[in-house]
Image (tube, rainbow, N blue to C red):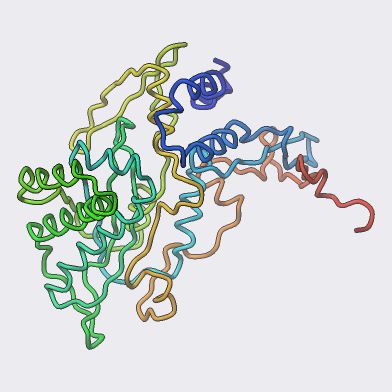
Length: 376
C-alpha cells in the first residue's frame, strides 16, 4: 500500500467492486444506489482531476493544490467535517439548562434484523425513543422538553446494531409554561416504555402484512425481556464544553476511524475497538468481504436523516425559545474549520509558513471557475 494512501481508500479501490458483486444480494434493494453513489464519491474524494482549489505562495512560489472533498458521510475525513458543520448549525439553539445523554438499545435477534431489512423504519425508531421519554416526562408533570436524537446502526466492532443516542433537556415546561427540573429518571418505567414503543413498530408492520411469525416473535420478546429493553444514561451535562463533546462524539461520526485499522492483506483486515467499560484494545481480524460488508451496511438510504429533533428542539419551536446558549462563539471560516478538524491550516504554505494566495478553482463539470475570464 502506498504510504500516502489512506487505509479505507486503499481497501475500497482494490476490493469494493468485486466484493459488491458477491454481497449485493444481501442488502435491501432500496440501499443499492445509495451504497454505490456514496462509495463512488468517497473514491473520488480529493481527486484533483475532478476539481481542485490551487494556491500559490508569494514568498517561495510553492504551488499548493487541494482536491475537492466528496462530502459523503461514508468518508471518514468528510464525516468529521460533517459533524463539525452540524454542531455549528446548533449555534444559539440549545437551552441553557442541564442535559443528559442516553442510549436506547434493542436486543439481538429479530428486532435488529427487522430494521436492517426495513431501513426507513429507523425513523420510527427515533420517534419511539422520544415517545418513551415523553411518557416518563408526563408522569413527572412536564408537558414539553427538548431532544436531539441520532440513529446509530453500528457497534464498536462495526456489526449491525441499530440503537438510539439521545441528548435531552433534564427538565421541561409544565402546562403553565413554568420550567421544571427532573428530580430523577424512572428507569424501570422508561425501559418498559421503550420496549413497547419500539416493538409497536414491528407489530404494526406485522398487522399490515399479516405476518404471524413476527407476531409470535414479539410475544416471545415481551416474555423474555419482562423488565423492558436496555436504556443507559450518562452523567448530567452541565456546560457548553460538555455538550459540544457529546454532540461531536455521539451525534455525528463515521463508523470507523482510519487509525483503528492496523493491518491489511489481500484477504483480511485487522482493526481494534474498545468496550465502553474498558480501555483495553480488542483486535479483530475479518475477511475482506465481511469487513466491507459491515461498513456498507451502515450507509443510509438517499436523503435519510440520521439526526432528528423533537419537542422544544423541533423546527416548529425554533422561534419560541426563551433560554438559549451559544455552542460556539462565532461562525468560523472553512479554513478555521479544517484546522480545527485536521490540525492543518490550508492557507499557510507548508514550505515556508507564509500566507498562500488563491490562484485558481477548477471543477470537472464547469471548468475554471476562478479567475473568471471573458464576459458571461
